[in-house]
Length: 107
Image (tube, rainbow, N blue to C red; front, side, top):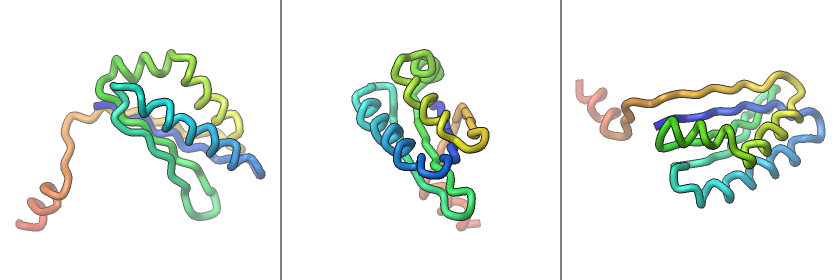
């Protein structure tokens, strides 16, 4: 699984435009079979970043998405950032859930 995280710091008055673009991506990617999840979150505090996350089934799927016309929407949203957006990609080889918490607490 591959995870892409984009943290955008909207310029004053631009947060609604950024949110509109990112929320629209959730709708579009819901129909993409290889996109496992797409979320938008608001950061609290002074920086007030918007965190946009995508989970992809494979690296190939993610790379195809990054080359796609639809990805231009995310690049457009990043243009509204008042400072350099943070972009991170992760290749996940193992995932734990409540079972990991239970295992850690059982020690």
